[in-house]
Image (cartoon, rainbow over all chains, first blue to last red; front, top):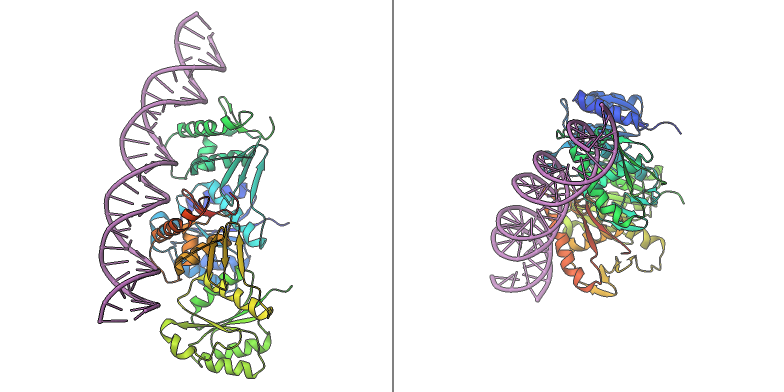
Length: 229
Length: 229
DNA sequence: GGATCTGCTGTGAGACACCTGAGAGTTAGT
DNA sequence: ACTAACTCTCAGGTGTCTCACAGCAGATCC
């Protein structure tokens, strides 16, 4: 199967680069556009499988772009990027037809997860649930639920995201910096102590119901989740 | 089985796009027309299984279009779209056979539900009632009735639509934005607090007669109805 | 063995999400 | 025309979550 093509539309070069790097690493083929006109051009030239579209663009807003694209027959889903303040006002219609939206600032892990979710749902009409099965840890992404050896655990949003990131990178050591960069929002400017705290929270919730410690510390390096002991 | 074909006839591009996007995602094959003449042309060219027809069109009204289509031998059902004020006047006599009508502004969930209902009724002449059986919650769409563990509940129109949407998407978290976009009318521009309110109303009615809480809150994400506990 | 570094975890402040009751405005029914 | 039901807004209350910090424990190095 050919690589999935993602078109990133945002006027801030920083955001574009951040997304491009992260998504390229996740295995996608990336195109970028800095404004609405470029976006329309890029789409007609090479049809992407999904678009990441900033709602606030210099030349036209995301809705105009969407209209232009849709009326030109473009049918692939769109993931809208919007400032948190705009959300309450003008988000109506953003989650129609497989489309979805994400508020800035977002975390990179969340972007990847959302893209996967959207593509999965639009490609296979009625799909079996999206489940990450990593041995003792099983994550049902549709229901946003986690089980350890079949037993359900209750996690806060951040705990959930952290565990998902660890599990999706099973058997690989992740540094605190990597975790911070992927799980926390890109404008977070606290220190890495927060990662330690959340690992601690997770262990306190997971270890009592698990037959073995799930998250191991690699001193001086980072953390690792291993599928098998 | 081939995809069901839906012809959308409306002069407002926004409405056309909204319907097209939503129905395409629901699994239908979509054609559009902006006026009566185009509609007639589209029908002769490729027979749709159902038509969504705006009653007020620039060139001719829905009554004329219907006449033209019917006299040309077109037999599939028509779902008329009409402004709320025009209902009593113009619609009478139009909804013969399997036809039905829907007032603007409508909710997307309602459109899909109506289309399904009409097609079900016209395809299988002797209709067994259209029932959504989701475990403890059972919704009889023909009778517009809801039972919890066999016991009937009395719901307001909005409560009914909200519950139906949750139940039709069992075991999947729905964000407040998704709920707002699908259950509320497309021109609603209040905030998502209304969803919280109606979830609260539903719980107050459902939980006293149910053996378990039916609608669960996924903090920071949305709401979910689970078939099994 | 003692000094130092790294990671762990309890405490607490502030922010945030959610729930719910009260009430205004509207619609529908008698 | 009156009453009841329904929709929607708003604000207070509550519990949870996030994050910083600091003291402690264990590992590492000399």
